[in-house]
Image (tube, rainbow, N blue to C red; front, top):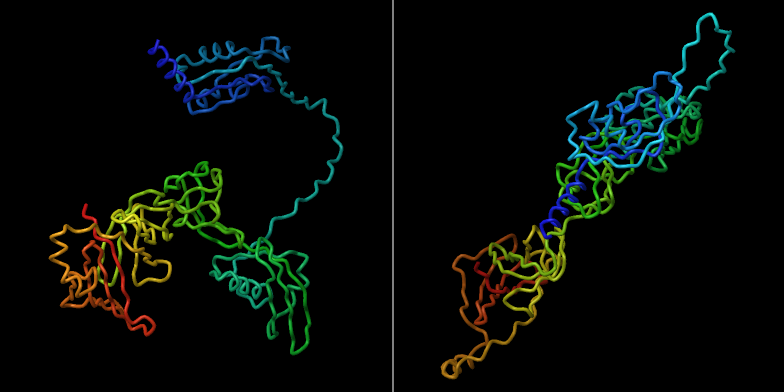
Length: 432
């Protein structure tokens, strides 16, 4: 019984992966009728059978409609092609009501009658006439507008093209050499309204608004296949090319797309916009990561547990494994890696709460150390002064103190008058 269930599940899974031929309920076609005329094909093996003939016109040619069952289709395919791999193709459906369309016969020349004069066909509006700004060399108002738009887009003249509306020709034909031009674009998009004033001395001789079509050539990134929310974007699912685009579209660049996570569904051929992706989560809440603490030329590493999800360059909180009461905020730099820069800005603050009290020492050790403990700080031990002071920028490490509980205190001097001395406390290094 168990073997039967396994075979049934295997067969079901196999059928789910098989190509499909789904017979339509009705169709219209001219004889001879191919498989793709009466069925929907899905998969390479099914598509390969699309041109096989499944029905030819009867001898008298009077039949206008015929019903084709699924068995009729299977038999016709087997007669035409004997080596069909039915194990990889699922044929489904009930029957197809096929209506045959008669081909029109040519009328003999003798029977032709004078045809009425054809009605005039309205002319379709012509597409815009594009001018690449780098090719516009004359001293005209059109060239001045193109130059102004290139400056607005902060682009190269070879990467901007413009087109003008015929309705603006009266304004754009105004001679401009030797005159002062005031050109102000008032928007950004497929059509940019441009306010134009032409001065001759102190007199305005022409003024108006020209609606200019603008496109900019940019390097764009698109999807080669459908992508769903949560998918990881890799190099094999994207393409990049140079394309004329509408200014103002928030198109994403390739470096920001590859390695990110899909937020919005992407269809094949769609271009990526900035809001379509988000940075991948490199550290998940509860992950054990390596936290590297930088203090000048000193690097200390410790293992800590992430208290939140973190993406690249995000600053999140960690709990060192050696002391669950401590809290460290560090910047996520890679999968399983975070960094604290003790000399960095406010986004990399090392906030360490007081560590737990050390366990009481044995009575004999307590008596032997009571005298020394009364003469100094509670955790004073192993104060090390480096013979060669480590210096980075305006910060110099003066002293490194190792306390009995394993923590280390680094004292550094800076040139900052507000904070001439900085103390940084670190947990012990975790040895793998």
